[in-house]
Length: 164
Image 1 (cartoon, one colour):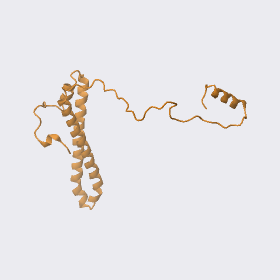
Image 2 (cartoon, rainbow, N blue to C red):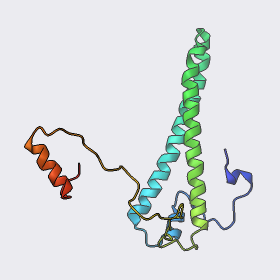
Image 3 (spheres, one colour):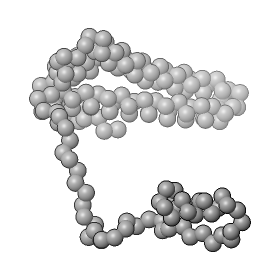
Image 4 (tube, rainbow, N blue to C red):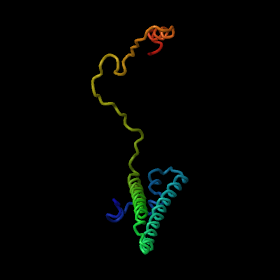
């Protein structure tokens, strides 16, 4: 796991309650509504709750392993323990990334956000050739005259009213 805060001491420029107080959003968008801030705070508390709940389930599964081993069934719990371990890893990774993004958002609060992206100009790949654009060519029908409806369609196609 790449937790920056575990690499050293926390940066002194970060405020208290940065993550759970949603200080990153308040600093980045001062006009954000209290409802939106409450929603962000609730999401963050929920994410931590999910991590701790799955970790508790993993611990409970590990504690039960001793009981399963007493009856010779320890191997039957391995799939369950591995699935819980994977869930805890994924949830913890999501939590770490969310905290890192909050810190980055707070630290970049003074940077102006781009109002409009720069226009993308197509790169010339080949010189434009004169003449028709590439694509499906004209459809040539070799139809014997069997009805007046076909004759009318051919005449209309030649007049440019419909494409065959």
